[in-house]
Image (cartoon, rainbow, N blue to C red; front, top):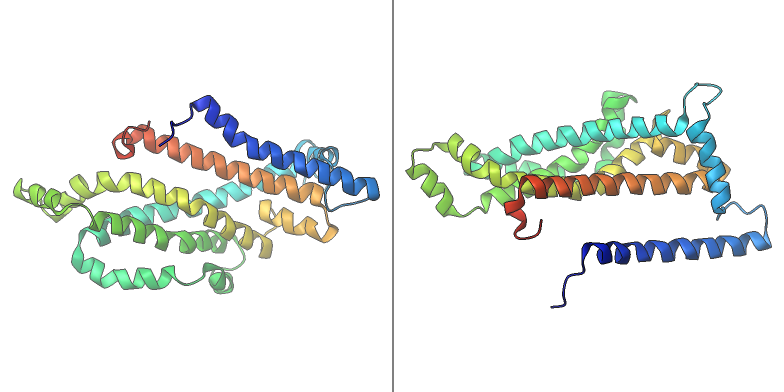
Length: 268
């Protein structure tokens, strides 16, 4: 195998595709604007900077809010609540289902059935049941990611070496002791990994809910301005969502390595 690149080289290699993509975009945008100065499909960086400056630094005349920050706060609040509830549910249900075979036989098929239902198909039902407020949006995120996370964590716990359980029982532990002393510590790194894998779908569900019924949020703003072909707002908002997702993934990854270094082998 080839040698692993150092941290500095890895950063440069990771940044290279982004630089190439940005350069290709600027070239394509410049070419379109040379043919049509009023082109809206590929706005120039200056136009995007001007549009975003108005949203970031200027208060909206009607609401008095700085729209960019209000959208970001609303979306992150909904996302945080949804992922928080999904993570807590996974930790509780996944631990019990994975550790206790009778519970796994009872609840496993139900979790699997819920997991295969497209969450977006449930959105009208959630709006009917919970209304158009925040509850339906948060519920969509929970329903969208929790079943997958529960299945993953429960499967990981169920696959733990049987010898560990036997040793714990031999030393006097009961079922709850096995769950708390054997299964829980080994489930935590897997829980964080499942949460990382759920970030992308969670953002999809959030944006979908905001696009249908919201008056603030990143998804709401994107779908509001699309009717004006305001790509100078849409593209920066999409880029901002990507940045937020990458930062969240990085924080979870670093946190897992710092707290559970043993689960990542020699890589720290």
